[in-house]
Amino acid sequence: MADRTQEIYDMKPITTRDSMLKHLVTHGLFANQAEDIVKRYEESKDGEPMKGRWDSATEGYPPTLLAVLRISINVVAVEYIDENCPGHFARHMFA
Image 1 (cartoon, one colour):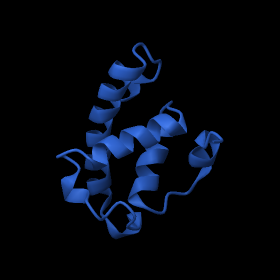
Image 2 (image 1 turned 180 degrees about the vertical axis):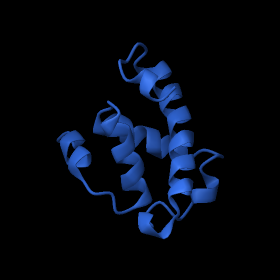
Image 3 (image 1 turned 60 degrees about the vertical axis):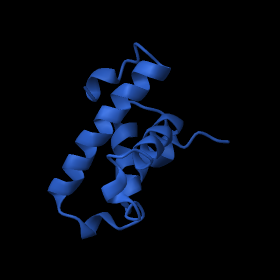
């Protein structure tokens, strides 16, 4: 499987999922790490309100909702980094 980091970095986010992937990648994570984090959040209790909405267009949501979602994703990113790659240089971007 080819690494999608550059593809995600360059994309214009269309869906909520794409927006969160781009947020994580532009803050220093690889695509596979970003995808794992988003999946972990989607499957969490905190992600339940977004269930069925991850493929919705970002333009359908106010910017404040996306900002709050990024804050929640950041919490999961820190947990993921601490568990899977402690000392990762990008950790401070999410803490």
